[in-house]
Length: 310
Image 1 (cartoon, helix red, strand yellow):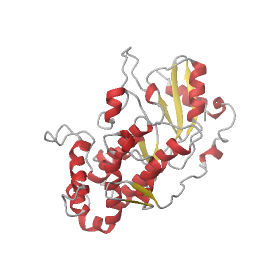
Image 2: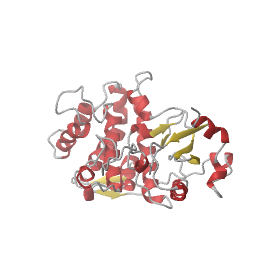
Image 3: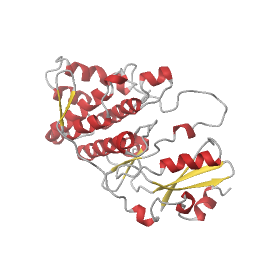
Image 4: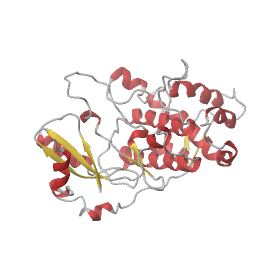
């Protein structure tokens, strides 16, 4: 079983598309969705990915048909997603800027191991309507400097990841127009609470967290993981800093989440070590590895036929 992603618009010619896909195929990490092939039919393009069985993080947080994620699962998703994004930014042979980091693009396995997907595809997702716009992404996750300049960098991904951490902590959407004014943008609503804790206006981090915490979580049970709650809240605060140069790298975010870093009163991160999350994906064997022509990696011609069937 594979997943097929049809691109909404064509970017570049056939040769250029093949070169871009070749770059995307180099990303191999246990927390990154792996591309196994592509399809072309005239001007239509599609990418073929390994199938991830347990839907997206968004489906579990907001789908309504699934039980609420417990804190253990949420923290595992936070750490695994950080590992995947860290790999894309820093450890992959070709550095990627994701461009649309959000719960819809975090897929989950049966045991809630997260895999980051749809990285590097932002410029292919524009509708082919001829509108020239600099801004690509999802409102609620866009870093302030990106909105102003239209220049996407790794630090914009870090900002978006901070919003994802808040969603895991609060269970609230990045944007919810049903809420009162002042609460509709999650990052803007939560930032003063996190800032107040940092400046000592709240007595403890626990007070800040209880103000933010998803009411669907069992508070007494979740309190057992206070160190994890602290780490997620701290990491979110770092990621959501308004100035991009003051945000940490994803390596530092991961060290905060894993407890391998400590912070001074100004939230400067000091490393205590790090761990690697790399592994060899067994799907490589299933599709004969990622060497050679990409056209050889399409699982079946039937994929293309089914995709473009009228």
